[in-house]
Length: 114
Length: 114
Image 1 (tube, each protein chain N blue to C red):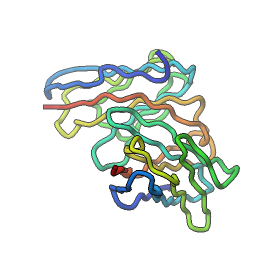
Image 2: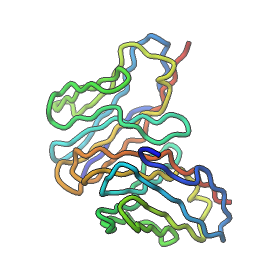
Image 3: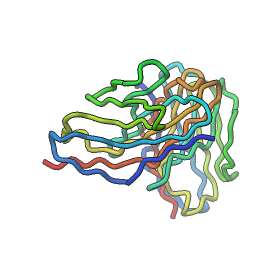
Image 4: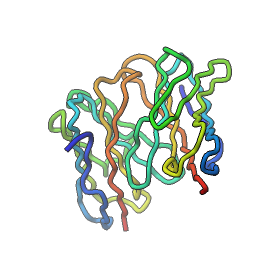
């Protein structure tokens, strides 16, 4: 079984401040991990993914995430928030192998204050 | 058209109506998915089609009936829905169903059941 925990439902930061969105996973086998972003009235867009290569993964729009096996975490960060980063962010886990299911967390809404 | 498209974007229906949601992917993928997104809940996988064959049905009520006539198109037929079925319905596609395969999402259909 696999699961994803995204603590809290809302994070608010000032423009230019560090963005940190937390994600912890549970998986019986080494997983693949994903971060998706959803802007208002749009579908989900992949920000980045971890597929067992480098543990520090760089994505689009200046985001990056680090896979820490010992902490079962895959937190998403961005050094400097921009107003356009306001959106909902979803962490997801999928086990290796064919036909595995993509399991999502509940999502976190990021607000950026001017 | 590029990516994954969904029509209609918004749908209001009564509990006795019959309607259909349409999804089309322009990416040459061979797997397609229906998800339900309700407020403050993780995305729920409803159906999976691989090579036009339904390979997964996650205990979805029979009032939801999927159809995949070819690898580019996916439908979700709706009849006698309940108010609790109101949600955003997302379609996604991927090339293969291995764990590392990224799923590409459409913008969704916002369904309201009166």
